[in-house]
Image 1 (cartoon, rainbow over the protein chains, first blue to last red):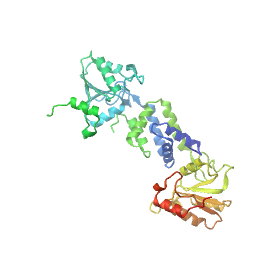
Image 2: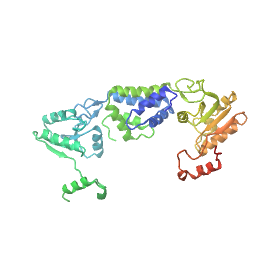
Image 3: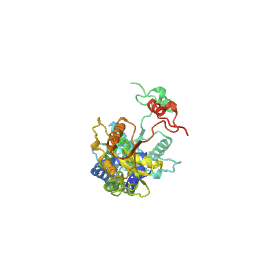
Image 4: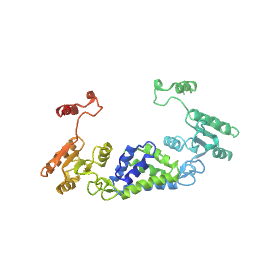
Length: 200
Length: 200
């Protein structure tokens, strides 16, 4: 692109470093900001800058947090005996959105992937084992994506957790609600027949 | 969305104010920044903030500029006798990209739109007339989108410029290069037959 302004070019380059934003989109965003009051950009910039400067990872569950311990871990109304193990912060948001779970979380920050060079020590497994070791945990729910890496991670974790007296469960897998059988993939459909539940 | 962090929520809201960026995309962008070094976000924020703080509109042609007069207007190698009138800064970039034009520009900052409540006084027409009045301009090229509003604007401008001794032209309209006749819209195809040029 042909920029007549270095300031404009730098701002476009900055936006274009973000995932999924190309040069053309970046230019549109920058020109949008240029077309508005300076105050709008000031607020935008301070919200982003402030966030990155002060945001922390919860030292208990590794969720994103404003304090050293997140507001899920400090919430006394939640069930401290159940830990839901997830891959990323986004999964916590998705589960919280459903309002079907009132226990605690543990963010692994990834899954074990021999091909990707990610071993058990690269994700937050040690802190999970420490939490269980402390006692008081009754159930651990593996809410991890049903991929090869995800299944490997669940297998590894369940082995590690064997020595503790905790129940280990995985989230149910099957045909989506509202989904049509015809369009379900074969593996999912096959497993959902094998893992059928009694109709009550 | 269910945010456990106010800082995160504010940053997501900030991104989501940008055009074409929804809450989900905003969250992805913010989490991308969280996953990287603080320095990355600092640079991002300073590029955007710095741009908005110091960027100006060229006082001659209304192009975006680092100085009070843009580097196209100050470029002595360019042809000062021709002014290309465009709707927006983005059009300048697109034309500069072609490297087919070495004259000056004038950014209207919009087109006359009675329905949208944009009259001749709301766009940079006055300054264009002043530039022509100063003398030395031989040709004015109307590089304005072929829409109803665009044509209205060209018509208005050509009327205003009648009293000056300048040639007024519009960019050629017709079937795109590489475009197939079959898929060209009827209006374009029809006009391109009427406005056929001699094959040399």
